[in-house]
Image (cartoon, rainbow, N blue to C red; front, side, top):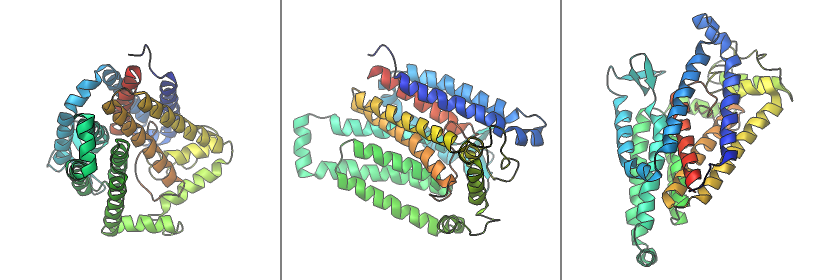
Length: 374
């Protein structure tokens, strides 16, 4: 075991969290004052969630990695039950026509955010057992036949993906499904499977996404807005239009922290989906590039953690977590600046919300755990 963790990775996470909280303090003040008569209401709620996330991060850091591997199926099973529970009356909560949340008292959480962790842990454990549970000689003979690789690995992998697709489809959460699907395919590819399996899984995922877009009118409208940004500028195209106005207003150095005008009700979802647009308005290209650089540093260091891992489960888990968080960050940024269809997913460590921040902090704890054991 190493005597210390990867401090470069830890530093990137530290700056992302601090940067996010300082920015949220100014961003949330107008809405907080208007709704609750207190400029710090949203900030204090997010600080509590960050504190809870840090506690769970420390727990994930201390738990032995082989325990995560043993419990991966149980954790996934509980998560799947929670995904089903969102459809139960009095327990599930519906917002904007989608049932994705579970309410407990005055609090609610989104089980699909934690599926990003549990699915990676389970797939990493399952693949490491399938590939490396038998002797090398035995495995080589199965590879030559090709039978084991297809029937015992690829087909079960598709079934696993299918279960996730069904549950998230009925929750109308295609954006989260895309993040999880891409992450799991990346883990499957890195595990050493035949490359045409990955290509086929990707093509099937692309076809499924196209089908899900076609059968939902509002998704078709989002695609039209992406292809033609001037479409319905006061309706479904409003968020993209105002995001571009905010980023364009920032220029090179920005309007200054707290000086955004778009956050005063002009830009929808300013604290969640469109937080990058406000950051671009207040800090300009310079601040935006600093944030992108922090996420690139996060990805680079997390991949170094994966490369240094001494066992296949840790390596695959590190790849999965790093892919999930980084891919989600750049999809959020890309949709905000109009080079990707509007996604509705949060920006990691920045967007207001509890479930995604807590899930990300748990993922960071597991990565730190892997780095100290590498």
